[in-house]
Image 1 (cartoon, helix red, strand yellow):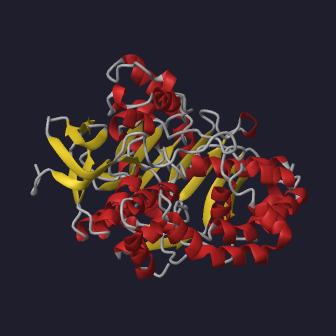
Image 2 (cartoon, helix red, strand yellow; image 1 turned 120 degrees about the vertical axis):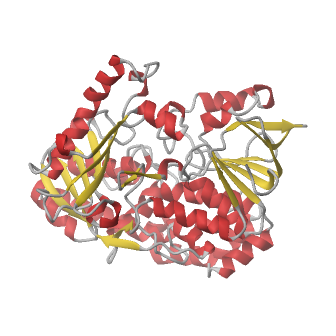
Image 3 (cartoon, one colour; image 1 turned 180 degrees about the vertical axis):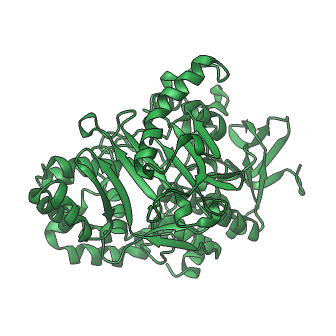
Length: 529
């Protein structure tokens, strides 16, 4: 199964973006690392797959900052920089929005959005949006003053982050002045508190910000960290900003991380399903695979699985009861309905954009089931993702499909098939609205409907969940260590949370924590941080 013996300094369970960032950085640190992936493709929720010449994204497709560099770069970009990997991207600046008030092309940047606000929400919304940007964009320098790659999970962070970047952090606070510095104290509080302090009451503004927060982290503005939202605002609403899509699809992100892993001697083994984490003398010493093989971890085991799936891999007696209860009672985001389509481009508008979002009813809330649909047509920017003259599409409900509706159903049953048709109808209708009358369902050459059971099965996700629904101000995402020595966790069940930048940061933090401060500092200096 392996070219080398089945052991490593560090064994990583799962090749999601968090696991790959962790594993590849550990390899860059000259650690012997082995990433074990149950699927036959790497990438976890970010993997891509091909059918009949159509290359589909299975997960994220809305990216920004992938080609940024330096202190304030996207965490994933910082990891790729450390690995010496480039990621060619196509840039664009808009996404199509379909809301109860109408439909419009929403452009990112500081000024273009004002025109849409004035038309669909009125002058009061324009003034409140200006007020919001004026208050939070200055905070972005503080929110981004510590590069994620500088953080580690021990007291060494005082050297690699606090002391190293204290001057730039202090400068940020001084430039903001007293009022701005006071606002910076709210970075770890819910974003809604900043909005409340600014007395922003326009319904459209509140709904729009809820939508952005939900797309970013699976919670509304009253549940998302202000720092995370402010980072996103800096990426989307500062002068000169753009969105990016990898030329070869989101799978290219995974490919770049795998290349980086292997370039520095790291290994990845696909089709290697971890059955359990082995605990000996109270420590994590390796993993047992489904085929019975033991893989030894000389220094550490890192789980990129969700907190609930990691719990299933551990013997109950190895964990404190309080830890088990904490995991079992952590609220969960719901799951997804997916639609993957391959179809002829004939009859489709040549000016079709890559991203579309449909909101059916603001009053139900952006987190209500069957209410929001996201659509991505990446072939409009990257024609190589589909056969000539064709388009590839992924549409989904973003973490709002109740798993309880599907629990216990036999995927071969008539009941399952009927529910599948019923619950995917809202996605089909959103696609028809975005693509126009030239699109016909029955003309699709590839048509795949995914349910929460599909999500659970293919991604090994507990209840097909998007991740923990941890609300800022009420609880915090767990750290990366565990009650078991030599067992660490990364991914969307750990700090900083859900989303590509967050899981990349989590993987980097764990990798940094497993090497010496001197090695960590050398890496920061090597990439100019």
